[in-house]
Amino acid sequence: MKSRRRSETANPAFGVGTITMHKWIFKNFLSPGDLVMLTAAIRDLHRQYPGRFLTDVRTSCPALWENNPYLTPLREDEPGVRSMTCHYPLIHHCNDTPFHFIHGFIEYFNEQLGLQIRPTAFKGDIHLSAEERAQPSPVEAHTGEAGPYWVIAAGGKYDFTIKWWHRRRWQEVVDHFRERILFVQVGEKGHYHPPLKGTLDLRGKTSLRDLVRLVYHADGVLCPVTLHMHLAAAVPLPPGRQRLRSCVVVAGGREPAHWEQYPGHHFLHTIGSLDCCASGGCWKSRTVPLGDGSALDSPDALCRAVTPGGLPRCMELITANRVCESIETLSRPVARPEPASRIFNPHPVEMTTVTV
Image (cartoon, rainbow, N blue to C red):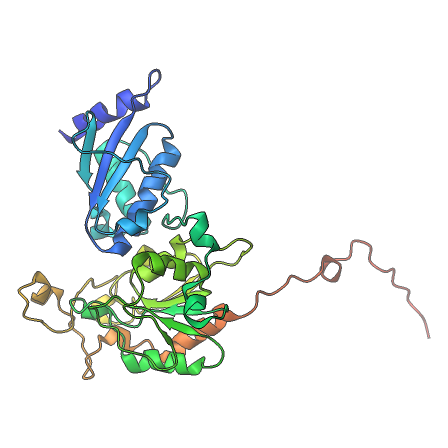
């Protein structure tokens, strides 16, 4: 059945002759970070099969799709419109295969639709309107001053404690850069985001669209493996900026680095340092059971190396000093290349030997 579906879908649309326009509504109701990866798949679908698809989405975060040029409003009851819930089963092989998360939905599209999509950019696909780009940053709106800053997300979901780093360590990093870097603390209301002293506190005060604009103007992002890391790569750079947006990710040993890391990001992991992540990510979910009836309380989903302080051992190994060193490296001014005349002189001075 699978091969028949592939040929039926692929041949009429992608062969020689009349082109059939395919209308698809793609669905996914997972976390916003996952949806940033879906934006990449839809972008690459249209780039490699231009004029052959009309696409719309049904997702848990409509704000991520605002201004997206690849979407056309479609109704599920329209003639010719089909829908598909999107998955990324490639994740089950990510410890052993050389793929990034950006390949996940792309490979699912290829399998289900009989396509040969390849990534065209190493990032998700978030778009800002001209009005959003022209607006002052949310930081300037709160402080009345425009200036450089980093976004910091120092927490996470209550049901995914494996990703937590200790509040004191986040605070150490903020204290290290006091008077040098303004950290803007963000976090969704209802999640665990303990307050950090010396930050601009926007926890629970930003919509998803506000967060996009906040990242747009930011010099860098500091976070665990979460949405903010994906936005750091997916949100476009302001005009005139050449340097990639910095991002330091406190990752530990849950996910393999090659599955999550983007160009220019410092992904601080411990893969290969502990028995529990000796050959890849452990993919555990919690440090302790929460008694909420979730499958994440099962022994297979619980961390096997929890420190007396409650941190996963892999996160304990990542020190505040290591994070500070990464931020220091990324915050250095871009080195200017030496003038060519100082590197290579095409007309060397003739040397004269003097006999004394």
